[in-house]
Image 1: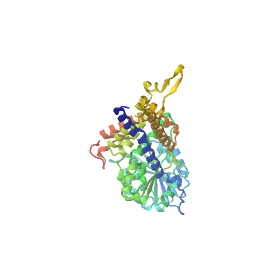
Image 2 (image 1 turned 90 degrees about the vertical axis):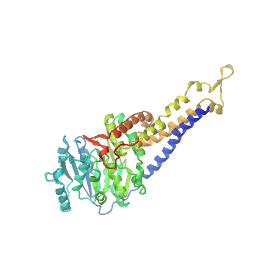
Image 3 (image 1 turned 135 degrees about the horizontal axis):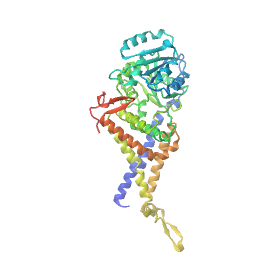
Image 4 (image 1 turned 120 degrees about the vertical axis):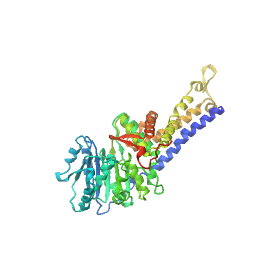
Length: 447
């Protein structure tokens, strides 16, 4: 082995097999931090505190009925439901109205905030109904739609806890009970969960678990559970339980009214304020179908990556670098290891056409087998880690065999997110958002 080849081989081993050993260790530690809901079965207090479940919906006519029906099947003994129809142009509002009696249907606009506060003050004397519906007609300046919808919904809440549920989520009957029991018993102020990623098409099955796993790794989602790390927190707005006193302490959704990842920023705000936050695995409690095609994935994950990074480019740049060096470096290693000129001499021709096996030490170091061996270990390690990621997302682990293909697409999505971060322009559900005009984000993205 020449000195140049030895250098390249050493760099490959460090970037490939060694890096994936470290990744496997970090993934195992992170999973352990996030597995408390499965291990612990805390009991609810008696009586259980009232929980207000808030469901924002904008043009979700095809899914909102199933979501509300699942919410109403919760086994938790004391809850109310507030559904917010946020300027929908389809039949979302009409569907929601079927869950409520006529006197429960409210029409709210931005000029009625004082009225909201007065209603909230007298809410404790009213009898709770299964579903109350809030219709929002206009979006005030400076707000994003989901933040505004949840802010208005919260002003009508009676509960000691607020449970935010996205309209595309399917909850299991014991979801709220399990989350509330854990939060109350362990004195958490906020608890969000990772749900099953429901996938139907090939591109969903290939990409969504990979993108979600990359996001979790990039931003160290498990560190949300470390009280000593106030700057590190993630959340999933699909299922997000917050103690009402903590929510009001930080100013609620008004504090993150212009954030394109309002769930993450709200959890970060709570943690910085000294609240106890947790982000746990909850695959058995809920399922969500996110993006169904590549254009949706490009726009959706550009928003998630760039928003979570607060417009900074370097986290996404590091992710691209890792994927290039840690995953796609496998390709040149395989090519080198399988080079025909190297493998042709592994078997030496003996007398009368027989074959004599070359000694292992000579074969390994003189005929390039070390490249093939390192590549095999590299592929095995990253495939095993990826298989666990797919399994934890509720999908079939064998899609991890296609990891290199998915990574190529993911790099393109990350580059697209970097481009969006540089421009500052993000499109989200019909709203154009400028990352550079939101607070806590620098005027220009930094590399």
